[in-house]
Length: 310
Image (cartoon, rainbow, N blue to C red; front, side, top):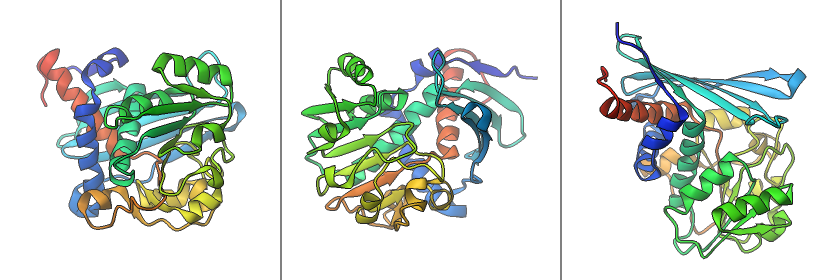
């Protein structure tokens, strides 16, 4: 019996680069949106509320391309001395059910989410985009900065957080501009990322310049909002999953906005990328993205660390 590989965060970081990950994520978007023909078997994720401690746990299974994975990710927004998010991914052989690896999931979650936004942004942002605004100062803010600056040449990057000292610290780390208000960060920006733990809107419609593109990656519950309902109703909205967004996204449900297409439809060429309009990509996260990313990491691990039955 083959031993199960246990792959740490440090190993994941060593093997996972945005230049290799973004094309993998783009392909997975396309296959997911092809439905049964794409070969992705992915139920809507299950959420377990932990109300006593203001937390939640998501269980995200998927079968794709010969591998089956399940990610368990927890989110405890009040954590002080621990990360707000913790995650592990179990990876199984999809042909015989044998477990292949247990993989630390925090880096995978951060990087695959940023890569999802990068794919959407490549389709929906204007090619001459020069200003990036990031609302949030956590892991996703950092990963989105690193990912988006790897594919765009920005003249200015602005960061805002509810605690200005945190915005200052992250801006110093990343050599960009800290802002004292969300409005200051957003006014005139070409690309905007909202990556906060807020349950009420932090991005106002009147601050967003016409033709800007927004990646909304927070507000992952049906009762939470990060984005002004007026923005949602006046922008062209894209989803990672049409099925999930109408069940899980408070930004969509509470605004009663229309959702035009999935990002996979753009990859497949079946819907238009309306980059001349104000656009929003509402990202909830897809289990297939964990499957393809963890499979990639596992194969890299086998090539570099030991012989595995891939």
